[in-house]
Length: 61
Image 1 (cartoon, helix red, strand yellow):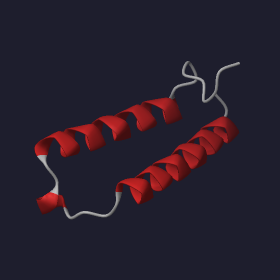
Image 2 (cartoon, one colour; image 1 turned 90 degrees about the vertical axis):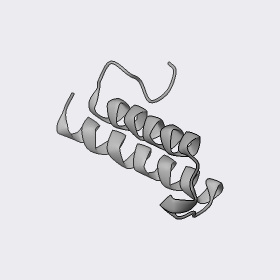
Image 3 (tube, one colour; image 1 turned 30 degrees about the vertical axis):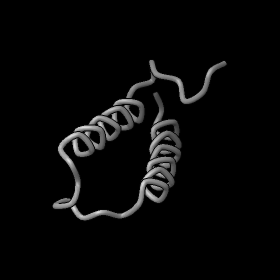
């Protein structure tokens, strides 16, 4: 994976996560249920793995 691919993947995923967070809404960490916290961490992990791995495509071909 080239540096350009990494940058594009990171920007696309960061924008997608930003949109997702806007849809879900802003809540303080103290107001988040344990399940919501686990889901948030899981989504972040998947996004991070997708950003750094060239084996996971951003779209189906």
